[in-house]
Image (cartoon, rainbow, N blue to C red; front, side, top):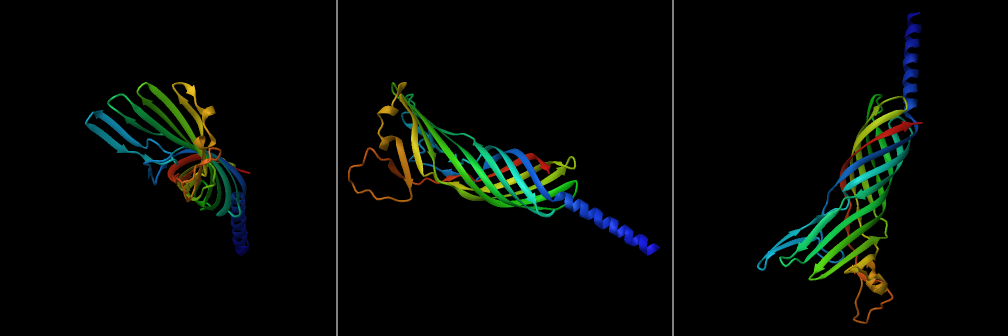
Length: 278
């Protein structure tokens, strides 16, 4: 009789554990939001990113210059994730994040009152196929994630200039191409109910983006729109790895050519969100 009771208790424990394990399996969805801090800054001196060197000319003989560090991965992000846990310890997740990048500003000011102000920012949709590893604990469930980042983004560079009595503004948008990188996360799920959990995670992204094309979307001088008078060559840019200039006249009906510019979108951030287990 005692053996039967022992066996009965063991079976009860076994089926209880199986039931708990089973409840951790299956589909889930989550939403999250957070902020990223840019890492892997890049220095820009020239070409498209005009004004990434800040300068303040305080007198006719004094000029102070400061190099501006630029990383476009910093900023607010929001995301939606859909996943499936094959077991209580391992699963797969497909996530989508939207990065609303912070602005980076630089200026060049002369003692005469002339200036050049530059501002650059980015927006990017990021798709993240991810492997998920969980501890399998009930109330507090630490986890780790690792996967790829596939992006589609747009970079905007705006410059305002004053030269004597003339004022001009130009906005350039850079896009095209598909950056691919990697990401990893460490976090913890906190069960609120049987279906709903709160989570917080630290997220690391390694990603660089070199746009393939650019075009001027705004060009004014003293309040007058200059876009209609610009040729295709003047308002469109094609970024390529290398090209050869022969000295022959350029074609005004074709985009101008520029070397590829590599922007850093690498970042480290904190996300918080809610997960619903189906």
